[in-house]
Length: 132
Image (cartoon, rainbow, N blue to C red):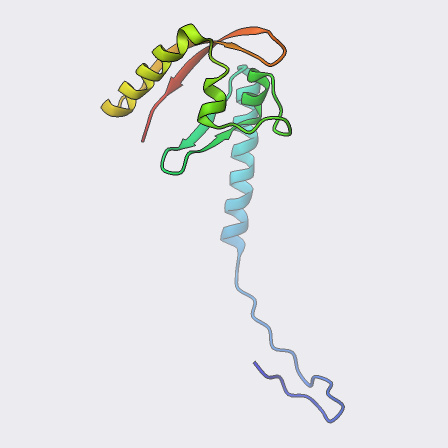
């Protein structure tokens, strides 16, 4: 776009576009509030949440999930393989079998896992998942 200028090259007018973004800003604020509520509920219940994009293998963890596993986002990148390494060997195969069955049947699945944190502490976790 070329704006009109005088002989010295100074602009003679300013052309602007100002779209209304109220709806977007309200949606952003609502999303922020919902995330804060979720994090508060997860923290109060000593629970974590995760989301695995099965097409590309990207795993997202809530901040409380890092706490449950005794790691930090700075020191640990959650991947399916890295998370499976936390599960005690005696329960790993059963977990994978139950999860695969739940995914194949498109049904919710649950189990209890015994993990070992990097500090050596053993922790039992209830696991509930559902593929969509």
